[in-house]
Image (cartoon, rainbow, N blue to C red; front, side, top):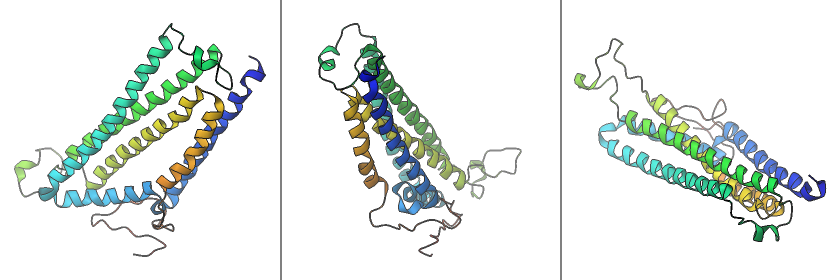
Length: 259
């Protein structure tokens, strides 16, 4: 390889990737330390309250819980289907013997040799596959929550509703456990969506590294506006740091804002 042909790809594409990676590392830090200043942290806390509310009034809200979770599963299913369809299309392009890249090669600014073109398509294929796996795992966890959120507790009046086991008879699917499963499902859904977004700069990389770099940098302010509350609790870290589990009464206190 000649450096003069590949230097833009070697410099701009990894640099754009590092910009996106640095933003998400900072976002993860903010979610862990000041969760109520972010959309992710605020929604995670609210979902725990929702789980405890559904479990507390299960007889009245069981249908609402199932319908809400079903809508979430439908969204993850759509994204997983889209990702695997794009993987199929990319696999067909990679395995095709017909040269569809010739018209593009004459117009791109950067390396467009056979090795670089193959690297672009394989990287895109890997990103979409990873997104598909994350959405599939998200569906798995939310399906578990769909069943466990309506399971009877140990204080149920009907003894026939509790399985006859050799244990104490307590239901192991506590509200904290169900909330943790739901949080894992939504976290995997978020990761799958972020991987899907990361495929946009890689898709533009086909037309040159400059477009890929500009797209990566442009995504950061867009994601920032979607990830942080514009006028919410910007001081919001829960006591002890991080998103704490709410107790049986659903209590949670912001350390700076007070109860």
